Image (cartoon, rainbow, N blue to C red; front, side):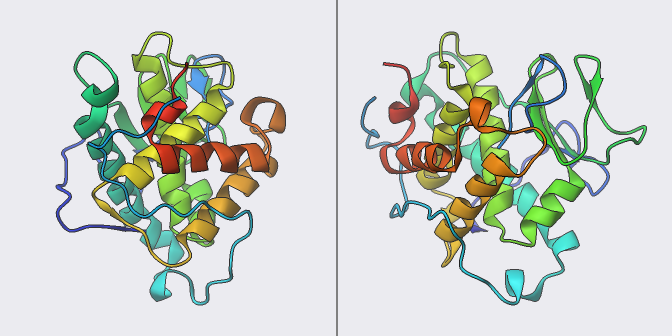
Length: 252
């Protein structure tokens, strides 16, 4: 994935740096942290790329990221992903919801166990996690989670951020979240990424998204099929949002 040049940079409440890039996504961390990697037809106001549903397996890419060093490359990808997702919701908020749109705070990257790592509801941020903190309205992610995911493709970064941002959207609209809130967040993430006018999809992105949804459904300490859905459910939810837009993710 690549951000198109016309996307403006934003000034965030907390700078996105290697030591402070907190986008929280995981489901752990007490009752105030929302999960990680959360009918109708898409209205004409949302400009979408040609939608290709993600595949459950990923084609090998060698070398990854055009030869970039994963530990460095993901940081700029995260900054781009934040801008892409925030711009989408800012542009399309009133297509679906009333009131003014407000962005969640982006804490950015954290290193678990350090003094700088955030807490949510009195619970410290845990390793290999990304989460949205309901009580303090911020998004954060573990540096190791993003770095390791980026080694498998840059789509991982966009998916994590779009999913956690979706939990912030759920928290802003009374009655929006459904019982399967994590799958709804996947749906909203698909709608934001494929509905963005600022994102350029590249060869292999669909495979990367499918692989990331599969891994995040099965192989993390803070996800399981009971709360996040299994791999097939997550891919289907994401694909629904990608093909049919935000309206397809809303309660009937």
